[in-house]
Picture 1 (cartoon, helix red, strand yellow):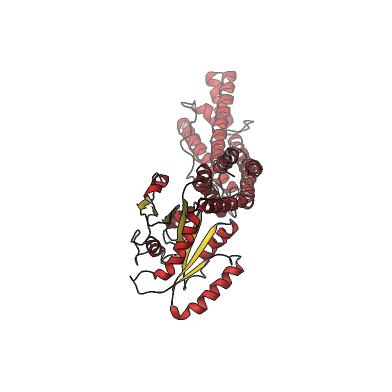
Picture 2 (tube, helix red, strand yellow):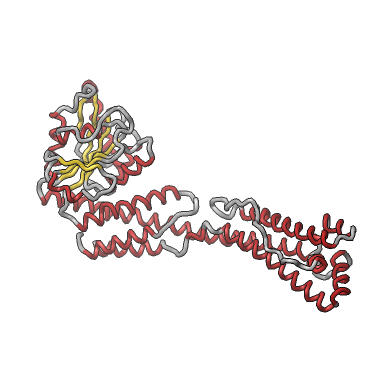
Length: 459
């Protein structure tokens, strides 16, 4: 289990998981993102480091609900105030790790951890007071789950009034599924209800497949009185039995590592399936957006070809004899055409992307041909066949001025240039609307399964 081959296979699996992404808000994506983050953290924080240094002290994380008494328990296990316990919630804002001075080098480089030294910590063991798993602080909840995932064993603290809460049971089942070594402390039990609460909790644990987990009830004490030593001694003994002897530590590590490796069979395939759904949805989204903007481009280019841009203001100024004013009105109509096309494209593609597309106020400044000859510009949008009307009149006047053939070439070239500007603007907008799905550069789902197969063969 500690072979270089297995470590390399797990490192490759972690790299494959890191390479995945979930940019599209598909059903189940929140769970997939969370599972991805949790797997990356656990492989990087526990599995790979533990394989690299199997002889390091055991890390026992003391976790649980808000106000369950985690810090009080850590202080009682060590025999002095190591971490602040109080009524302010959340009390544990920075994780506190306490170990023997001879074990300091194993943990001194850990960022974001308040390291304490005390020789009363059980040999071969380090205790970590984690933030509350149901904290009002999202960062605290995330850190708590991450630290529990990096532990060799858990001491889970709950209370007589909260042992049936959903958040603790989610993590207890997680420990069960990963075969994590676990002990549960049922804290703050009023003496008069102990005989009712303990059997009920044992019943729930058995029903959840956790009937063999050691359960340590602690009777309720006066505020500030500390925990009864008679209740703390069994927990301290449980820790000492697992930390003092190298063989016992190795057994804990083998169990935890084995459970985590076994859990990969349940965790990686669903992640790969979620990745596959992202790629499939991205492909459908691109096709949908492409169709939407192809239809929009056809509409815009037809408007550029059929003479409709010479209606309204352009026609009025033409009939007033204002050629330059009519040309300016054509440019205004071109801007309006593209803005309308953007709006049509957005409407057509609104349902294409799982996120509903991107929203833009409209096109930016467009690079229409500079200093276009007014008559050529009017003729260029006057209709492809230049039937009777303003476009044909403008082409005729331009032919008289510079000759029929040069005028025809100038009008044709300008018409093509206008079409290119419209097509480029809409193609750019189409590309922006699929930018979200462009975050998926290559399929990664098959790579996850292949990496998992290598881990299986290496274990």
